[in-house]
Every structure is written in C-alpha cells, then in structure tokens.
Amino acid sequence: MTRAGHGFHYDSDMATIIEHRPTGRRYILLGAGYGVWASSRPNRVLGDLFAHDRSGENHMLYVCDADGDVFWLHPNEARVVEVDGRAPGGVLG
Image 1 (tube, rainbow, N blue to C red):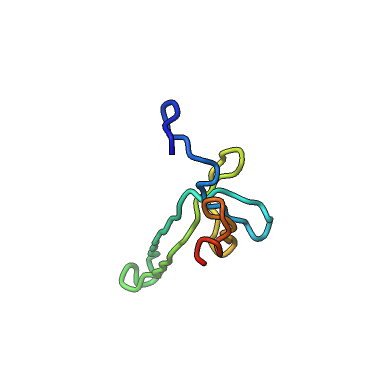
Image 2 (tube, rainbow, N blue to C red; image 1 turned 120 degrees about the horizontal axis):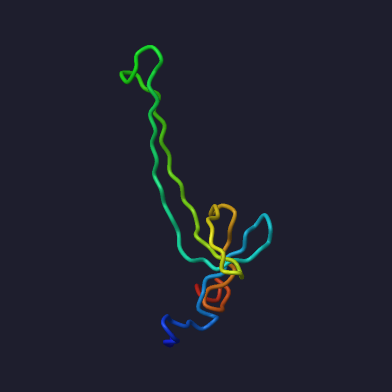
C-alpha cells in the first residue's frame, strides 16, 4: 500500500472479487452487514397484551461495481472468485 494524494492507493490485486450468481457480474467486496429487526403490532381485541410480534435477521454484502456505485447483495446470490489476485483455492490450498 502506498500513499497517493489525500488517500491511500492500493495495488489492483488487493481486493476480494465476488460474482453475482444470477447475473454473472463481478463486484469488489467492501464489507458485510448484519441486522436484527423486530416489530410488534397490537392485537385488535386485546391490544398490547397479545400483540403480533415478528423478528428476523438480515445478512448482506456491501459491494461496488466498476463505476464505484455501492449497494447491498444477498450472500446466497454471491460467490468469491478472487482474493488478492488469486483464486480462493490458491489462497486456502
């Protein structure tokens, strides 16, 4: 990593590249997110005593495309194809 201007310049092979399975498009993995949510709706007859409760978890990948646009992808729709310029098997094996 070298300093360039006001930020940092990274070598192009220092990234995790993922492929979006449904489209085949490739993206740079920026991070991952985990969220927990809960909601409660009062029961029509008994109010909050027997409220309708719902909860869940969300796991998402934060990625960017070649234009630098960032967005979230569902992890079940992605696979890692490259880590620091090498195939995942080459990094692990």
